[in-house]
Length: 167
Image (cartoon, rainbow, N blue to C red; front, side, top):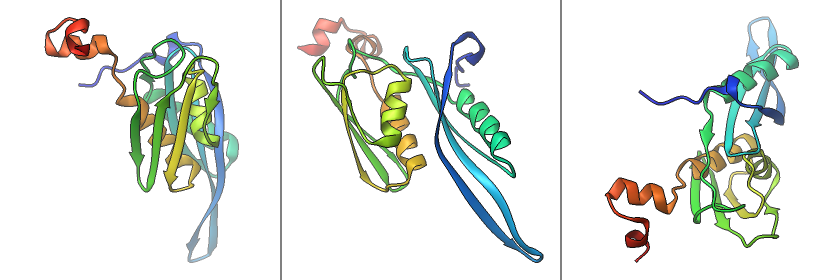
């Protein structure tokens, strides 16, 4: 069982990444709906991305927000940056996260920047490779953030002291 984060205890803000009008051709014509991708985060380490589909935009945004709250993760940080460089993938989208010195700011493209800022990272470089789809880039960024580990967490897994892990 996965340990879920309780979204009701966090002060989350939501940001819409993309709104797309999608059509399904049926016997009577075309069925129009909206697909919305939303990022929620508390700017203090917690972030989630969700997708919602509905006939009207407000309903799709509500569904996407609920979906994002179900998939919240905690992002380990070292100061204002990430602990190490990492690559995240989702579909054809790849995202490379890199540490940056303090004062650099968030150097990233549209949806990756939104995800990184929502989790509270202030100094990080990010390069997206492959797909230009905003939703897939956001989910690839989430994959990269999900796989980050601190020296302390690695030491605990190995049963060592942090100094022994570093060498």
